[in-house]
Length: 233
Image (tube, rainbow, N blue to C red; front, side, top):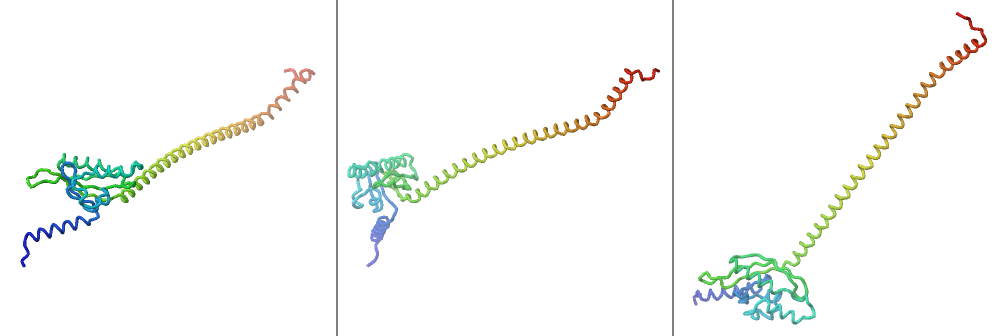
């Protein structure tokens, strides 16, 4: 029995469904109102909490977000995804081009980061009839990134503290050097004064002896003059 083109199309369609259904990445197609036309198992399990891939058809992200919030009304941060997804759909439709987004929110009370690619979906006439999208869970990668950013921030703060410490240390060293130079200058000045005093004392000592002799001679002359023993010239 020959293989018909219609059989090939059906085969390819089933193969495509099989591939998209089992891929770990989230895949979907939505209409202009943000209602699902197609969703694979990954988005049903990881984001919508849908019972199967048929349940999202005709419904939007907000429907599933509200259902999760109502089911866990005692936990305000149980599910915060929903509106953000619809908003990014509208941006893609408005700009009429493929775009990349980073969307995040709580799912089952835990923070979920998605790297999302969305593009316009056209009919055969080139009219936009919705969007197609793919999302990948990057929570672990994002945590590593955030931890790295925090480490770099801490490192930058430590570097600033070290630079501040070095500046303060340099300032104190310069102050100590200046103080030491002043003390050395004072010591040199005092040493010079002491040397000058010793020199003056030495000079005074050298002059003191001849002055004493002159004084004694003068006194002797005065005594002789008083006694009349000096010869008159």
